[in-house]
Length: 206
Image 1 (cartoon, rainbow, N blue to C red):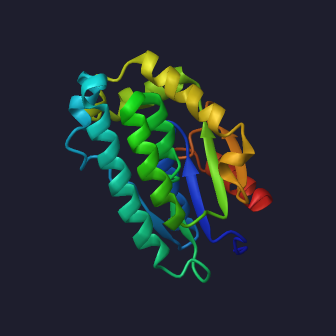
Image 2: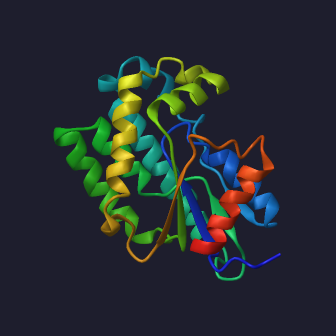
Image 3: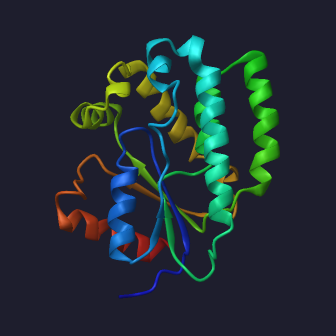
């Protein structure tokens, strides 16, 4: 097996893009460690999708603190001599914050984020999984997580657009290589050839 040049690799994409599934497959393939976001532990999440405006701040702050703690633990590992795949980029928190917060709540969030981000390890490579909003909604429905059942198409459309905008500006991922992969026609969980295609892209780009 060819060794990966990149040691810390983050897989990103909107909800339903297949981030966690891909990270688990890649970490097994490369005998690497994985860092998985713990979404279900957020006690505000199911309430958030029922009433976004009311529960946005609590939901976002919980995620910010949880991701910060997890990333600090990751930073203490030897990222130079082992490969780690993560199913999220710390900056994703800011994507969601700007989608869900406004006014004083967003200002308070920004203050906390700017303090925390200085301590966060920077990935060597980001794999951005793109998909249409229709495809994301289909995948979300298939996995049928209870807290996602109230998620609207309009919310997902806005989130998908926010991701596209984020990754269209290189300043958002300075000094980090980026690979964009359109997953609309891929089934890397069920079809090995699709997984091999992604691995080939990683070798070429990372």
